[in-house]
Length: 367
Image 1 (tube, one colour):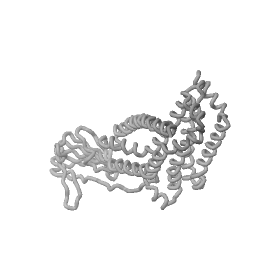
Image 2 (cartoon, rainbow, N blue to C red; image 1 turned 60 degrees about the horizontal axis):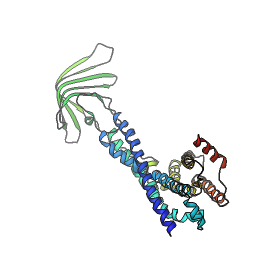
Image 3 (cartoon, rainbow, N blue to C red; image 1 turned 90 degrees about the horizontal axis):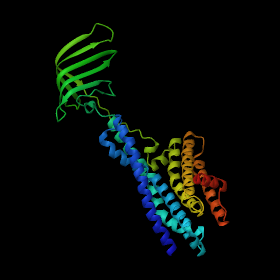
Image 4 (tube, rainbow, N blue to C red; image 1 turned 90 degrees about the vertical axis):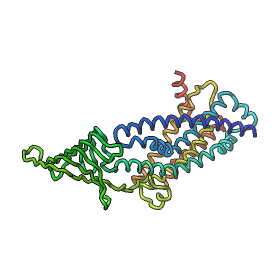
């Protein structure tokens, strides 16, 4: 049918443009945020692009929901504004007839939303957490950088080296300070190197230096000179303690704790949100040529933000045990479905839903 092909083609073009805009905004936001983390030393600068990619994968489900909702609203609003919808209505097409072609367009997007909600979201969170933990639990040698003071989070040592060889095996002019049993020790050395013992332990072996031991504020410091002095390199295994966001959906179902059930309600809720917003966009897109073009867009933004925040609130209530899982899973979406049915009914009767709210937005946009 010409009507369906025309609608699906325009929806596809609009969705591509909207998704690129959303992707650009997401990449810009994540770039600023993650580069800030790298500048503050929370992540490895070499992992910036990896973390940006993982973050985008994690939020693709949300981006696809917004893309679908905004695309349907844009296309139908333009059809109303350019009087194309009047022609289709005169040909016997009703609001109900719009559901079929829009559902065909939305079906692949909803499948992708389900995939990224159930698989992509936990996978990206898991990989991001591993990247951050590797950086946080790196050994002390990886902290060393010529000309910089670096503190070890594991042993509370402070290192300083003046020079380092290209292979990172030999260092010059080393300064190490730490605290043991309430005493401060300071070690200075002309040079040092990294050695690995047969049992796998690694040491920074300092040569031709001195060690100072004592309690701050007391004069009885002890000074020792040495030719060789070994400082053990502390390293730690990554502790695998995933949260509910890192668990795959089957694992959430297998261990139905409150936190896992809340996360499960949120993931299942994403495709339900997509379906409700897909249907809601049809009556919401009704546009009068004499009304401001931005009214529908403003209402769409408010509706999406409200729906999304309520979904997060339901997740929090389920995690806290204030709401049963089944109620949290279905109640919100059933209420929105009832609103969608009511709006279709009002459109069939040629009545505007929320007339006072629309009038308020129209006056605001006109001003």
